[in-house]
Length: 123
Image 1 (tube, helix red, strand yellow):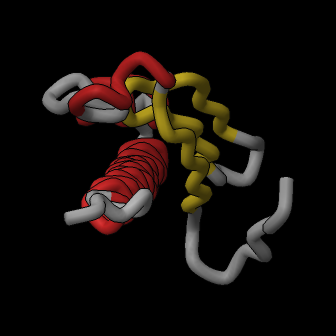
Image 2: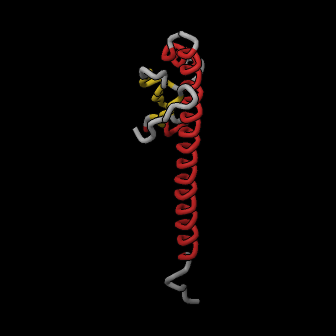
Image 3: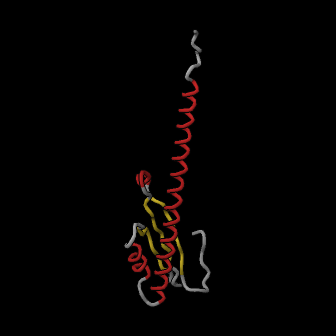
């Protein structure tokens, strides 16, 4: 009985294929985690900007209200501005979760103000 030189090579191909599948699944999972963090950052920024604009419209400190609101969760306030027209611009960062935490955080910006004012997009 002679032994074939390629005996067992299918096992190696299956192992390599399994490794490729795991790497692709990990990459897809990482993209999903980043996407969720960006969505959470955008939601938190929207809420903080709206709360800040409402507080400013009532005569309060819009940026303080935005900061107080964000303090309740993991999202951190990077910057807050209130222009002379009462438009509040909020920049926030949402930390990534799990093993991606080392990579940093997901940024977001939101703008809110009185109805009827043109909002400058793209700043």
